[in-house]
Image (cartoon, helix red, strand yellow):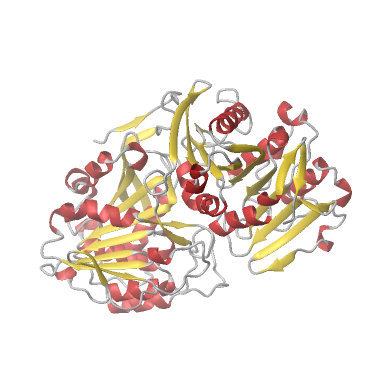
Length: 599
């Protein structure tokens, strides 16, 4: 019935195409009952794309929505780098139970959240965790709101058309319940004491007064409270009122108050034909914000297109027989004075992601604009990953991952970066003595490899979520390019979130990978004598969310390690600023040596 196509071999001419595309029927089990949903993966979509969970009204099956709702055509019509995956859901026996009580473990809200979890698996495709959205119509919109109220921290946007009649008791119970799913970590002991009614979610409530579920019963007020909006609305387009938060947001600058918004509208017959006439406007609203991991319940920010909004240069060119992708950000201040050589920062994304993802997540462009340097965000090619890790399965579909283990059937990553750096220095006003590397997760491993194999090319490096995890050191350290590395010292600042013990330990010991990685860099920088004999006696300096260790050589901070409280496996804007202001800007490489200027 459904067309599901699998590409069995990655094509060097089109290496970013997904391995799976078409329509895929899937099932979840909710308290012993099997319920289905459909994935629509457009041909040409990029991994780590957006995903929209679509719920129609009573009687609308996933087959109806697939054929008639218009969401597939909308996904197909976008350019390849903007295509998205559609997830269709359906009511059991044709009827959504909009009167179910809050917390019903076998109810429709539970079904929606089980589908969210299933759609986040990476065996067939990869929807990025920052780009999950809910779109519901009529009774399906009521259930979409109920599901969002029960699990608000995982979605970046919600729209409901003709479906505002969530029961007041349901809203009251949801608002007072503790939020344990904190977007990247679980808070079962309520350490943060965040209630679900306090978790912001950008929402567009479109009433349709001609249907029974379309009269606003307080859902707009619920989401306005959650987003902390105050004051009168402004009309952003005819018939659309917008409520924006004016107070400062927690964990600034990692969040933007402009993303804490609620829209309200009221149009007769808006929900007809699955709200098909409004879908493009709904898509634009939903995709205009993302929920990035880093702070508790995630960080909401306005989505910015690297090229159109930030003025980045996009490159898609062949290197070593493979098409490769990278973004270059050159601040206006640098463009106006091309005769002045400026620093360069290479910033590498993590497993499954892309240069576009990391540009938005890390916001290195903001730091570069303020301090006047160039940033490059390359994208890794797809590949399988097999390592000692609970959340990475070798059966996952091939996803973007740097070839850090130098596998023969994939391009030589070091040669790619050599080529990229040579081109940047030749074609842009780059100061070769002030080239830096940073990256998150798999990008942190790529950063380690560059620092180990090419230390003479970098003045300093900063791996984020950034120690050898999953046994990576067993495969990287024996590589010839590492074993035969030049004896060149290089400053290293590593970061780790305290909420990622499943991958790396925040507390270094002689037995874990965190202690091993720190010790390795101390040895490589001729500082082996400073390796702690007892890590329990090596206490960090603590301020705000940061716990920090530092080892100096001749008053120069050559090795640093920082953990961040209540941070999952993530990076954040504040980290990018700290890396530049406290570390990168102080180093250069002159005559082969790392030079330090504390001012």
